[in-house]
Image (tube, rainbow, N blue to C red; front, side, top):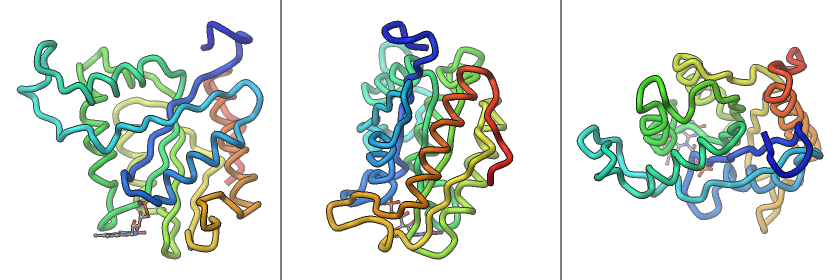
Length: 198
Ligand SMILES: Cc1cc2nc3c(=O)[nH]c(=O)nc-3n(C[C@H](O)[C@H](O)[C@H](O)COP(=O)(O)O)c2cc1C
């Protein structure tokens, strides 16, 4: 937890499952930064799409790719993670799976160990990333991370939710995003969230 402000201040590292310009998932993270409740600081990790595919031979102190090193350091420093991602071919996008591959090593001392993680997502279609989120939550839980079970934020019809400048204009989604952030903070600080509000 923060060493600067109050004991209960938390820092969240936000990661987008898309490196695409105009990504609604990245826009959702920018909205989160503006909607963060008191005591929550959100930093968006910009380099996710530059992280190379996991290579065991490169995962050594001398050969570690700089983008993977930066990612590990950023995650290790954060109190919790916020991942906003769509789904590609009914699955968790490669960008996220690649990042996780670097983050679950070294075994037993991974920077992700026991991190609190919230998963949110927005898609242009009608299912609001439900399949991607289910898969990602399962994957994270399988590694022992504390995935926020609720409130959930699954945003469909992306084109109706943001203005041309990429600002979130859907009040219901904005309110739910506030609730997700408050619950993530609660889980980080007290080890549990309110839950139940799905
Ligand atoms: C090859 C391809 C596969 C896709 N598969 C899915 C999918 O399975 N489910 C879905 O909701 N959207 C799918 N989409 C739409 C993308 O998820 C959507 O454009 C994107 O997630 C939203 O933007 P962002 O991920 O860049 O933020 C697909 C798009 C492409 C190009």
